[in-house]
Length: 288
Image (cartoon, rainbow, N blue to C red):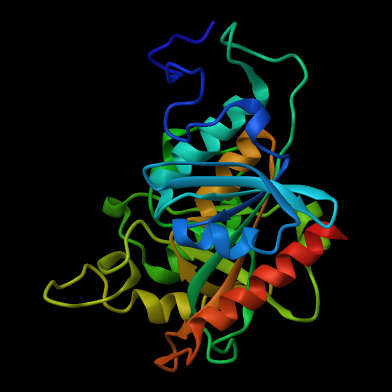
């Protein structure tokens, strides 16, 4: 039995941070970072059956073209993904009354819709990127036993290529779900490695008043390629979603609307339009 200090429940029996009970979620789930983006998606639903919010975690579940879908905001960063993924898994794979894992496990289908900056000149603003792999620069997933699921050869090549300082921890690389990749692919999508940083400024190479450990890291990542798969973009959640998804048995994919191009120094004239287009694309693929 899982102790109450490890799996914390609210007085109403819901999981602690997400404030959800098992009946509140669908098995098809869309993640967004921004809580205000939840309703930008559910405005297209035919109906909404449930809505709640606690802290940055806002959830709405409803029906879109006959498909039951949950939309959830995770907040920013790998630490929030640790909370979100573990508590979602508890909702479907742990009996919250007996506090024991279920004998029959459920796999969730999870798609992250995010915004991101492209690292390549030929991946322009307002385009879409699918992360075939998540490259974790953050260390969060190293708290778990990930050796069986990580892409070790690619990790070693990245460390060598960037002359990575291991005082920052060892990068990890996890592949997306192959079934989700096939379902959501099209000729509209750019593909590659999505880098996940543990912060927005220094960890992504931005310099304001503080010097950073490796000012050349972004340019090194720009030209990293392994078996014809190259770095595509940089954000703050994908690798954590892929890693915990694989460990827990869920099918995960990250799609990003490119609102900035770090290589050319450009920013979208209308980033909201780019995000709305990705929302419509993702909902359409879920409903197929």
